[in-house]
Image (cartoon, rainbow, N blue to C red; front, side, top):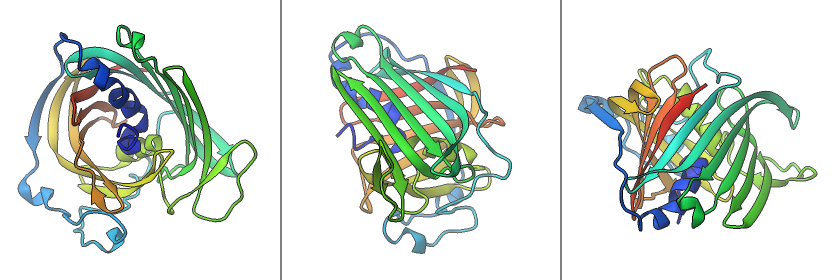
Length: 291
């Protein structure tokens, strides 16, 4: 089940879902995150009720919602940005660390792409029972952050996996040293999806959705702004947009997990908190430091 949920944020959930079963056995640690949530008026919440899937493009939406909203003109990641997070599960703090990096722009497959990276590590004492050191690399095109190539370099409990996949909606052959994943046009990988959610002007658009490939399977992601919140995390206090994220598999919503993303209302639209309610535990990933 842990890998199914990686459709939203594969990097974060690889830590949370893989570790939660072990952390659940431990006691102690009180969460220090403070969230004061203010819901949007009901009219905004009803922007679109039709679930995404094979007929998502035909769903009726009003002027404030879109199936494939383009990023706000002029928005782009900050080259060299480093975001450091700490992960907690079942009220046990600091079970894992996560670093998200924007490593500039590079040419890949003849296309200009952002090189996005993430590094996840479990921390002691959890590391003694679940050793995890994962690296993820995304090459996503400027504008809509559609994925060109997605890489997973995983080391989990002594098992290593190296995966390099070129994403294409066509029939291109696999390049040397990589395999090909046939996906829908505009498919994003999890890191590209994070940047895309940052690019949306949530004051004007309340619902977006689109395909996401997590390195194993293609899903549909639906993100809806539900309100605003004042959030206190280790990195400080932030005014945020509150985004509910749902995952669909072949048009059917996956109801075994629920995700809420808090995106700062600053110029960079920094992701400051992710809350995940899983079948066996509640988990959160909090911004610890921004460089």
